[in-house]
Amino acid sequence: MLVRRSIRKLEKKYNTRAILASLLICGFVGMFSETSLNIAMTNLMEIFQIEAATAQWLTTGYLLTLGILMPFTGQLLQMFTTRQIFIASTIGLTMGTLLAAVSINFEMLMTARVLQASGMGLLLPLIFNTLLIIFPPEKRGTAMGYVGLVLSFAPAMGPAISGMIIQYYSWHFIFLLLLPLMLIGMWFGLRYLENVTEVSKQRIDIPSATLSTIGFGSIVFGFGQAGKGGGGWSDPLVLTLIIVGVIAILLFVLRQMRDQPLLNLRVFKYPMFVIGVFLVMMCMVIFMSTMIVLPMFLQTGAGLSVFITGLMLLPGSALNGIIQMISGRLFDKYGPKWVIIPGLLIVIMVLWFFTTLTPASSIGLIIALHMILAGGIALIWPASQTTALNQLPAKLYSHGSAVLNTMMQVIGAMGTAVAVSILSSGKNKYLSTSFTPTHSEEIANAITVGAQNVFVIMMVIAFIGFIVGLFVRRSNETNSKVKSMH
Image (cartoon, rainbow, N blue to C red; front, side, top):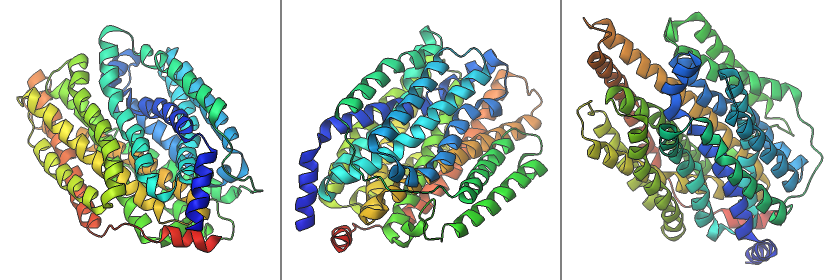
């Protein structure tokens, strides 16, 4: 009780609404940017004269940069003040957004994406860590619901809004329109965000940093190379990259057993954290795979325009945002299981329907399926995230959010690369047996087969998630653990 009162005092000390608004506005820009180019891939391939596997690095590279940077954030959040991290992250996001808006070639745009991801890599764990401190446990579900609104609603809105922009303007306007929003978020932060953590002397472990960069970088790059065709997964370069990456990560994990780890892996001693992280990763893989495969199917397979594709994705994005807010409140009232399990059943059912789509499928059916899938993911994501972080003691908040975000982004990057690889493999296999492989109808059928293969794999992953979700429960240990620290 004493700890709860002290936490409530902390909540009164800070302007929680203004702080939340600032962090979420800036987070919205970063997460919107993450998927905003998915629907423009076909156009960018023609403009820059690049292949699909190269173009998808505009998304994969963004996620990879996040994955490489985030293992450092657990210590960075302890080395620098809240405001210092906020300023550094928003400068990176702003510079990247501005460069993307004026890019004239693939190299400039790729550099812009890395800058954006660098800023977002600092901002994401800052959001989680700050909210865990300024909100008491009984209100975190609602707060995380708003965070979930940004983390899934914003990237879901990316293709929809971008599709409408591209229909009438250049893709550059996607980023030009984000700049004013970014400046508003920065202003709110500079005015209201206070330092909520104590700075302590930390030393970045260079060997750990090196192993982390090599490990995550090699694995994601290897997955990306596999999607380019050629030798595919049997390509010696792909196998070498993945093997090197796995070895580096194993060495990295062993080194984190030291007294002052770069990334404190002791968070995995908490079972609800493990289950929550797994379910969040499952959502990330399904979400990112769907958001890159579905626009390709709609444009190439179903022969729809970019504008129509964007409009079709918009209702699902809106429903996702609404349910994100409701999901957080349901979590606070009923606990995780009664929110997560229905969400998993919905996702499994919709993915099965997605495996039956053809170029002749009605627009209404596809819109309805996308809306239901977005709603199901919205039920799972914030509840799983809050369940994972709620069980941790206060001293592990920064490391818990760093681990969660690191794995989420790397798995997302790997999922995107695998989805493109499966899509390309299914497409190429179909066309290799076709008598008219250059005919538009055959290309549409080939894309459809590849997309169906992706949705089958996603359905299997969702079923595994359902089994894991049966073991989820509300954590009753948070208060006692916090109390023991005081």
